[in-house]
Amino acid sequence: MSMAALVPGLAVKVEGAYDEKNQLLASSVSFKGNDLEDAQKIQAGLHENTQELEKQKAELQAQNEALQQHQKQLTEHEEKIAANKAAVDAAVARFGQLDDYYIFDEVTVLFGNGKTKVDPKFVPQLLALTEKAKTINGYMIEVKGFASSAGSATVNQKLSEDRAAAVTQILIQQGKVPLTRMLAPGAMGETEQVGNDKSAEGQAENRRVVVRVLQNKAIAGI
Image 1 (cartoon, rainbow, N blue to C red):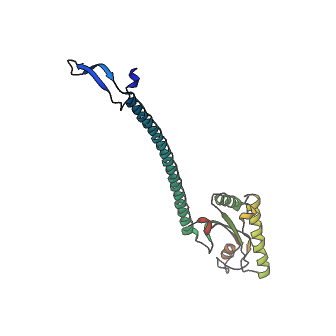
Image 2 (image 1 turned 90 degrees about the vertical axis):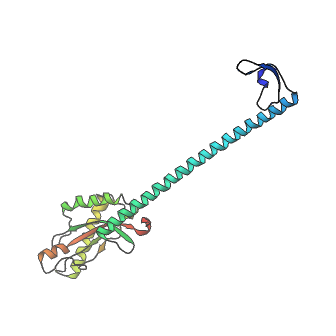
Image 3 (image 1 turned 120 degrees about the vertical axis):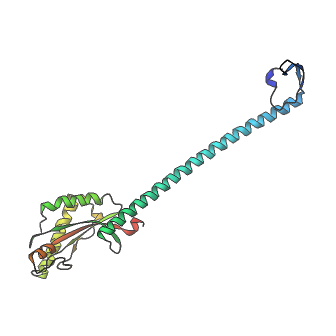
């Protein structure tokens, strides 16, 4: 038989002599047919086991890669939560919070006495606010109109309503804020005076609309 028959595990009888390097030079190699058959079966089993082990190794490697990917996603998710918390904390430190919302930013628009038209100089601020809002997950925009206490309370109530409506129109039409992101405009009339209504400067501070970017606390997930 050919040399290929000498598989590992085959019991053989070897006749020969040692050379000067003490290496055995075989003159004949013999074995039994049953021993060859057994050795070949062992080799076949080892080959199958090797294939099975390679398969298991590949499966384990795939599982390990999947676990690593999952861990990476968890880490990224945790980093996003941490970043969101940092942003919320910074916003709360600067603007505060309501019962159900965090306040992320706000713009105050001032009006002339008896006026409801928005001064063009406030439009860029409002549009910048809408762009910032769109970066916040689940944002809402709150608009509240106010008036000074000078004059009729009924007239001042209507002024605060019209001022809030004018600002809301800019946010929707120019800022492209969806209606679903707008809280109902609030007409606060003479309430919540921030300036001294006995002075012209204080009255000017009170004739205002306050626009706030909010995020629901449940959506923030913190």
